[in-house]
Every structure is written in structure tokens, then in C-alpha cells.
Image 1 (cartoon, helix red, strand yellow):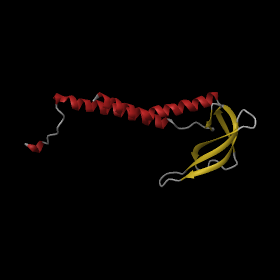
Image 2: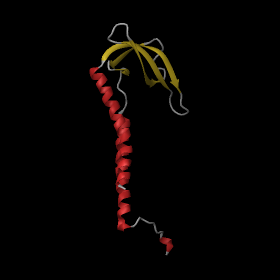
Image 3: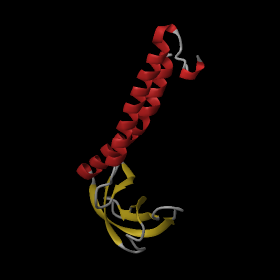
Image 4: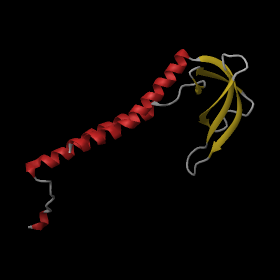
Length: 147
């Protein structure tokens, strides 16, 4: 049973781990990244049935090596950028496809959700374990009208 509990905790930790990785990568790019100017080369709009549309903006920017260009993309609000527009870009030479554009991303809502999910799983495991260990018998519900 303990192996099942461990597997449940590990699965619940995945969103938290991934969110923390995104936050750390973005902070690293902001701290150590090289600033340059990119040009929007293509925009792919995704529309959802309910809710706002988003744009995946493809940009091309010059690296620190003259004549060498990189391409990367990011997701933003619909119609925030236009094809041909120049935008400020920060990148790390080791990972030129990972870029940061202007404002900070909103990872905090996902971080809070991931922590709440993990706490819920801990509580659920505690309650499951409590039910399993109750008098050595699994919990059974006896309705009051069963007399």
C-alpha cells in the first residue's frame, strides 16, 4: 500500500516540479540572458470555443555571432504583435530556442494550484490510510434505516 501512496504523491508533484522549472528558467534568462531585437516572422492564432484567442508568435533574432540567426516562438494575447514588428528579446546562448519577451509570465496561479493539488493528495492519502487501518476492517457504511 505504501508504494501506491508514493506513486500518488509523485504524480501530484509533477505539475509543481514543471512549474518551478519554468520559473527558474525564466529567471535565469532574465538574469544571464543576452538582449537583442527580434522580428516577428509569423503568427499562428488559436481560437477556443469558449474564452479568448491566443497567438503563437514566431520570431527571428540575431545571435552574438554576426550573421547567425535563431528562431523561437512564444504564446501571447491575441493581436498584441504584428508580422514585421520588432520586439526586445532575451536569450541564453546555450538554449537559443528559449526566449523571454518583455513582461513577466504569470506562473504564480499555476504554482498555487500545484501546491493546493499536492496538499489535497496528502490529505486524501491520510484519509485513505485512516480508513484502511480502522479496526483492521475496511470502512463500511451502515444506513440508519437498516435496523
